[in-house]
Length: 428
Image 1 (cartoon, rainbow, N blue to C red):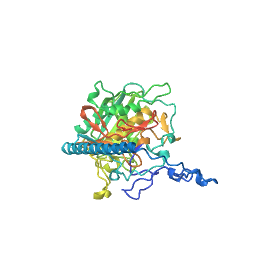
Image 2: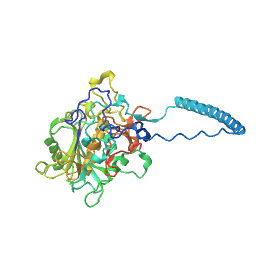
Image 3: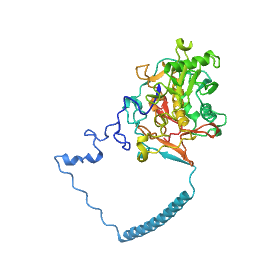
Image 4: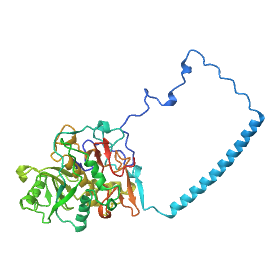
């Protein structure tokens, strides 16, 4: 439901050291009832009868066969030496080639200790991300509500506060990258549209899938802070009501998403302390209609180490802690927002009225397809590790491509097909 800030989760235990590996959520594979193979003794050691005597040794081979064996051994030695020289030369040339030409793109293994996020300690399996073997424990169910199956899904953007043109273009380029393109070369794999394909696997009770087409229908800028520089959850709905009543936006309750983005100088209730973004639906008493909406804030000046991790790290980790990864578009705050926007859009599409796809028995606090994979960006992730992602020659970290040559780091979502977290950059 809500994209939680990584520093405040009531159910998360503290980590003793920022560099310690997270404890495994599983019991040891070797238990007294299941000892390793070395503990399995031969059966005759416990038998009251002695073992049978060993068979007699075979007779020695004739002299001419012994000479053949010696000759064969010499030939094998020569072949081994020749193969060793060839392999050594090949390895040397390969190393030389590697040192002379730097690859344009490499896989960054963040499972090493220096990329461990101390603000994301291991959870219990019932609320875990993709731990190995946890898929059978996730009870994600359909509760008969609607999904956004009508095509296209219309995004109504509200820019609240002061936004630069480059920041607006970056966010809009991500949203327009969701829809599949006629020319796949414009958005090579792994792509944002491939990521959304997992979202489109979810259906309603008629079997209709979530739409794969997402467009920006309209946008509105409120640079005058019409509802102040501090918003509550209710005043966020008032921002939407103003946009609807003054007619910049239509009433689109069938396939519309109203997306409120607040600038770095706007504070919002629970922002940075408990959430980085949230979604819900408007109350008829506030707006006049029930409309799905989401809010996400720019944490760049307020709490980047909380809501824009791994592009920023906690200050207390200083020089000895894990270093921040390079944002793919050079803007820590907005690059951090992208993943939160993706999280909320995926959950709105599959659970717009909080009565469709979620896990848990409490609809007021559902665990949705983004919550199940929060903080997971690549293969091997979980328990505080973001997983293996990509890094280009400029040090920019990402895991999927968008339109216009854009790169983004976006969290994975839960797949109803794989029964696990999934992303287009998966290595297995």
